[in-house]
Amino acid sequence: MDREGVLAKLRRIDENAFFSGEVPEGRKATVVIVGGSALLLQQLSAKPATKDVDVLAVEDALRAFLLEDPDFNMGCQAYCTCLPYNFEDRLVEVGEAFRSMRVFTPSPEDLAVMKLYRWEAPDRADLTSAAFLDALDRDLLERLVLDPGEAAASRIADPEKDREYQNLLFHYGEYRDGWLA
Image (cartoon, rainbow, N blue to C red; front, side, top):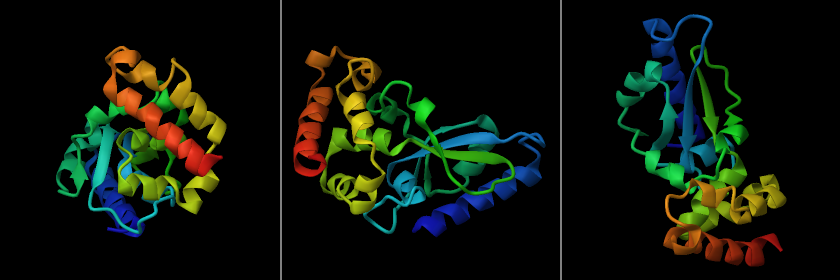
């Protein structure tokens, strides 16, 4: 589905939640979307479409509505260890008017950290696209990757013994030298 397809699904969920009364009037429930859908919503994806919508967090009032749609992947909590500490402080609200919910994505820099952990061909395409590179705060990304109080703080293992974190550092070096120089 393309960006408009993701937004259409979110509008339908918003409408269902609004008319159900699950979200009290005057209040909006929160959902945080990650992965390719987050890039699409921010108009930063190298690809024009995604196969699903990865949901990192959702308030209980919206959960049942998201579960009704098989395109919403609710099993993304493992991504939390691939997000820098306090990523919530940098969430970007999707600029769409919803009646019963607020939709957020991680910042471009936090999404970059997530993708640098994996650094496969689709991740490289996203992180090296002109739109992404133009939106990226390179100094912030460097701090999120290298400051011990950031990416390493979200990990369970000691950073020196954490193979995934060491891979992140290696991938970041490749990314920095190849595209951020």
